[in-house]
Image (cartoon, rainbow, N blue to C red):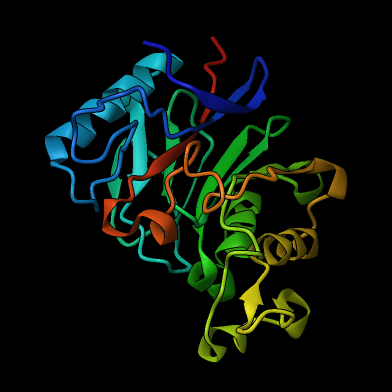
Length: 246
């Protein structure tokens, strides 16, 4: 079975991938496709199986994976061993063969790597996390582990586009007005542009930022979208790993 994904980056030091919906996987399940989310209406055992398929397709060991219980916050944790990290939306490590994993369905998954200094990071950035500072916090944690901001490269995953990200004033006012589009009946937030701004403000070189132009809402055949699917939305996964030096 072929698992479709986006190749975010590949070198002899780092591998980074982002899963697509993969509708052909598990058509008889409650949520068709490669849904790897525990916080969905699908049975946990099914999500476990889909996670196993994902890691197998990448040639990675699921027992060497780390992920957070994401809460749309600003907490970033240093990862020194596989497993689950409570109340965490950002992960950073300098250890080889230890994958960092983020789950999304409209929010952005960011994968960071400084292959020169051997540090990687990952974070989950919806509007709440972005406003709270999860993006600059992840960069800061990476620099504390030895990364250099001008050497860090970043992949920003498909997420909901400004055209479809309608919000109320209580959300719009939390963003700089530059990133609020008021040409619609209600305000719309440009999450991608705000994240891009945060990255450059954190010292990331423009040439080192790779923004995927996919919109999760407008492409339901490719991506899960909470706004499109509601409670039937699955979760996609973004994975990054430092390869063994041996």
